[in-house]
Amino acid sequence: MLRVLIIALCICFGYSYDNYQHGRRSDPYNYQNDGPRVSDNYIDGQHQRPDVVVFPGFGDHYLNDSYSDVKLGLNGTKLPAHKLVLLTESQYFAKLFGEDPTKQEFDLQDMVSSEDTFKVMLKYLYTKRTEFNAETPLQTVFDVYLMAKKFGVERLMRDSEVEITKMITIGNYLAIYKFADEHQLHDLKRFWMSFVFENSKLIIEQTNSTYMNESLDVSKHVLMALKATPSFVIAKIKQLRETHPNVSFDDFKNIMFIQRCTVDDINALFEMNLFDNKYLFDILYKKYKHLERNPKCPPCMLSPHYMPQTPLRLNQGNSYMISDGKVNAPINANNSN
Image (cartoon, helix red, strand yellow):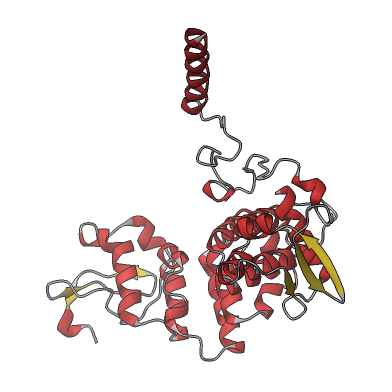
């Protein structure tokens, strides 16, 4: 009998260890091997965490008085709940139960502005599933995220972020940027920038350029993310200066389009007096430093450059001049006036 028992234990141990080795959970309450979370690879909005329910069968106990040991006061009603579910999934309730483990009633009237949104969150605590679908308004997902944030339900916050990435369109991308920026959702902002880049053509073709009617921060980030020609971006910067006279160099110094500017584009920026001249000259130097070896570079000679009597870059007492459509021979820096 003892031998049979030992063999049975060895078989069970071997099966459990094999499950562990292959990443499968033999223990439904052990979450060390759930696999990647949504946040591990959610930037494409595709990866979903496996459907994991902390308490198997607890979905049936949502708003069910059976075994309920907690009441949540809301709009004159008391919603039945279960202490173990609340303190396990909500940092807010975990803190309250930590202060008073015997507490059985909570008045949430001042914390909850929408009973429906709160119930969405509460149901999620029991089922670990959202009920978002193609008909769900974007604002509803925003509200669910904010409710989850207020009660410290991190899983629901992550799942709401994922849902927002699936809902982004040309019609709502500005609202999503504002939401992501306000709540410091950096993953969502990165996804947003990818969306803008991939949909640059559609955004540029918008006749009303709605992003230019937003705050400087919103307009700037759209311009930073767009896949557009430098001349297009420069024209938009000029437009921004009309509505935001205090716009500064610091607002645009990290925009990579500057590195793709031609001399004509640099001239346009130079005339705007927005950038430090040395900064512009440094860009020109990097772009045309090959002229030190080949002053008669055909592409440069044919380009309609125009920067009258302005040194391109001082280099050991010499400077190249770009004027009247020509790249001049080296001249002495002292005679560059």
